[in-house]
Amino acid sequence: MKLILAIINHDDAHIVIQHLTQAGFSVTKLATTGGFLMVGNVTVLVGVDDDKVDGAMEIIGRHSNSRRQVVPAASELGLGLYAPMPIEVTVGGATAFVLHVDQYHKF
Ligand code: 2BA
Image 1 (cartoon, protein in one colour):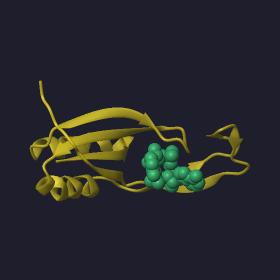
Image 2 (cartoon, rainbow, N blue to C red):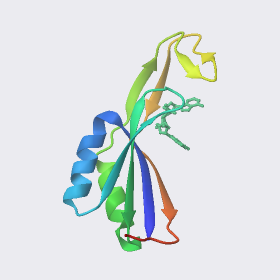
Image 3 (tube, protein in one colour):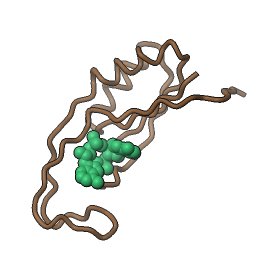
């Protein structure tokens, strides 16, 4: 079994979760915040059998879009650092990690 941990743009999260759920995956949604932009994103946890990983990743990738985002000058970037001038970054689609699950219990 594997645990997919995918960080998704807030604007795409609803549609990604909807398609995963329709395809029969169990999903847990966490409200998270990116450390660089310090804006909200969504992390989804999906526990899947090994042979279902590709199917779940395909859904996540298909519905996650990358976006150019401007960080205004003087925005705090964390750790007390501030952008000296506006900078543009490409955020997402999704950043996904696939972790091996040692044990899985349901009580
Ligand atoms: P943030 O940390 O807010 O990062 C937003 C975007 O800012 C990133 O998009 C990237 O384009 C840029 N960025 C991040 N750190 C940077 C840095 N030190 N210098 C210059 N530019 C930087 P993505 O790479 O698509 O990441 C989107 C979100 O996914 C991140 O939001 C973070 O919440 C998460 N993420 C991405 N990679 C991660 C990783 N290796 N571990 C944990 N979380 C990650």
